[in-house]
Structures are given as structure tokens and as C-alpha cells.
Length: 424
Image (tube, rainbow, N blue to C red; front, side):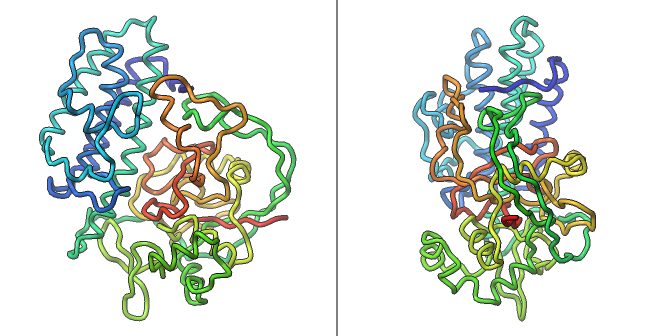
């Protein structure tokens, strides 16, 4: 896996590792032990499992192969906390992670502490000549844990939403200051041959490359995300009742699942409320719509007389210094915020992952690396759609313009929304 490290200093990398590991524990801290063991659907993993799996990752791919004489904390964890690495060995079924009552939450905490201590000592004792081999694995583990921090919040939101008491994860404010939603402005983007994909400077996952040339036709892209107010208009116009707007799979799913609104929306008098990590709150018309599937996003675009951008259109359109600065300033917050009135493309990479029209496929020349870490991305390049950008719950510093997130078309529990595009 191509994972250049951001710093050649073991000291700096060890500090970032400690910060990342502590951030996971801070996200779990508001939760009781009972909260951390619930699995509300097969796609959701318990908080305890996320904490254990990210620890298993360092134990399996760093300490086990590279620390002479290392003995696992518990050999049984190899089976319980392997996610999908077939080359590592058999694993517990994903849909039954909620049945793992043991180890306890406290024992998983002790597991994390033991591995943190072991990997800290390992970094301190690693010879400089081995750092080019070891450093990228630790870097990968840091970014892997950041992915699971986002998953932890996605998953616990779904868990708490299934509780009839509608408990809040936090009582702190969820959003950042914003403005009322302005009418959409369209930004024209020239076509031509463009270089796309990661350029090799800094960290990237293997699916972000190789960098290659692509021919783009001229197109237009909306300056802001689709809002809850926009979505309410779609619903009021019979959006969920009009088969002509939907892909075949989408219309089948609408009828089978009874979709009538985004996930977590429910009627509230004459309006709508939505379940958030602060509990049930009124829907804010100016905030970006979130928790909609690709199937819903495509239907909305059809209703609006537009389309979704391809992932390469999105990447080219977001090459702007002001966007990069906004992503650099990104603060983790727990619900999408209304945009600020500024020129250019707004809210790219800071509020919701944005569905694109692109299937998740390999770039020209892509080859997964050998070994179990090669299963990280390449094996999922079938039946998934690409999302670009980043979300309010994405850890600061984790997103970048070339990042390729992916989910199945019907997935709704991710913090996903959309931005419209059109032909020039």
C-alpha cells in the first residue's frame, strides 16, 4: 500500500499516534458500558468493537510481524476483532458483533492501554534504518483509526436512535454558525484533459492513485449543498411517490423499505424533526440535508432537472485555495451546519460526504499491494458508489480532495448528502 509518511521523525509520528488514540477514547467517553455493546443493524458495529478493532490493527500489522518476541494480549482477539482481512484468518461474523459480551468494555480499555504501551516502546526502540518499513504502517494505522472514529459516531447515532427514550450522545451545541440558505448559484468549470488522483506528496490510501489524465467535458456545479429546505420541497412535490424520478433499484427500495423522508426524520406537528446526536430537534431548513442514500440523491437530482457530479468533476471543481483553507480549518462538529455567504464553492469537505455519479472502480494502472493490507480498499471495488469531500464528524486533518469514500447505493446511516451538477 502506498502510504508515504507525513513526518520522518519517529517522535512526531508517536505523538500523532497518541493524539489519535486519545481522540477515540474521548469520543467513547460520553457512553455508558451498556451503550457500547449494542448493534442496531448488521452495518453498525458496537463502540466497544471499534475500540478493540483499531487496537487489533496495530497489534496484527505492526507489533506481531515486526516486534521480535511479541505475544498478543489475547490470541482469541484475532478472531473477534478481525474485520475483513481474509489473509489474516477466520473472523467473527459482522452481523453478530453485538453478541460479543466478553471481553467487557473495561477489558477492551485494558487491551488498548497494553497495546499503546507496547507500540510506544516499539517506536522508541526501532532502528532508524528500519523506519522506512515501519513508519508507513503506523501512519496507515493512524488514518485507519480516524476512519473508525467517524464510524463510531455514525454507528452510535443509529444505536441511540433505536432507543424509544431518544437519548442524546451529548448536550453540547452540534453545529457551527451559518447563514440562511441562499438560492443556488451555478459555477462553470472548463473541460479539457486534467490530471486527477493523488500526486504522491503526503499520505494517501492506495485507491487514490495512480494519478492519471482524464478528459472532462465542460460542466456546471452548484455553489452550495442541497439543504433540508430543498429536500422538503422535493417531498412536498411527491418526490417519494413518483416512480419516474427513480432508478429501478431506488423505486424498489422505496416501496420495500417505506422511505418517505431522510433517515432520522419524523413528523412533528406541521413540520419535521430529526434525530441528532443531541436527541430529537426541529429540522433546520438552511442546514445541508444528511442521511440520504445515493438512490435518493439521484432521484432528487432528477427532480431538480440536474444530475450528480462525477467524482473527477468534483475533484477538479474543488481545486481552489479557499476550499483547501476551509478544510484545513475544519473543526469536528456533530451535525451539518448551514453555509456561510461567500463566493465560490461552499461547504466542500466540511459538512457532509457528497454522493457522486461514479461507481467505485480502480483508476487506470491500480494494483492492490501484496499481503493482507492489500485487502484494505481494492476488494470492495464492486457494487459501491463514490462519495467525495468530508463530513462534520470527519476528524480534522483526515480529509483531502482526492479522498475516495464509498458506500452501497442504498446506505443511509453515513453522514452523506449531495451537491448538484449539470452539463454546460
